[in-house]
Image 1 (tube, rainbow, N blue to C red):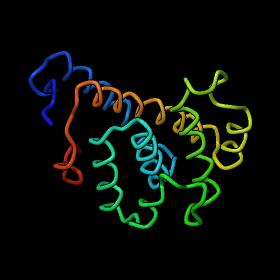
Image 2: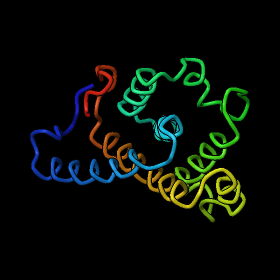
Image 3: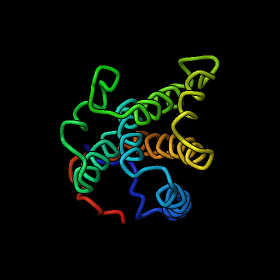
Image 4: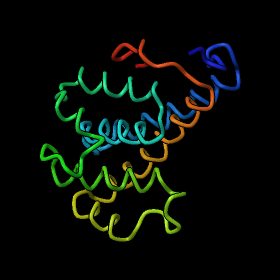
Length: 157
């Protein structure tokens, strides 16, 4: 597969990427656990069919010490016993926040309340921002058909 658009060869795409990467840095440096961040990015990317982000976040998580078993089970997190209750709450919020069009009410009050049991207000803000951000990356990559498979851990900083 060949990309429809090269971010590096287009001024608009580069400027946009620079700004969303800056937003991403805010979340990365927040108190939301790094492992949770990677699980959220991976799950949203799976749902959205973004091969580039699925490849990237799987490899980055492995390089950061995440287990292959947990990464293999992200898509089936409800049935898996390897995730904490907090991670499960984050994954549930990720799914509802990613599948907004599937539910007229968006993220349910029950899902939000469950996440609020495990995360403080700053962590919840980071979680909501992360779900929005990874969905932005996914959509941009899917629209422009960015290929997957060649990513090296840490490649994008």
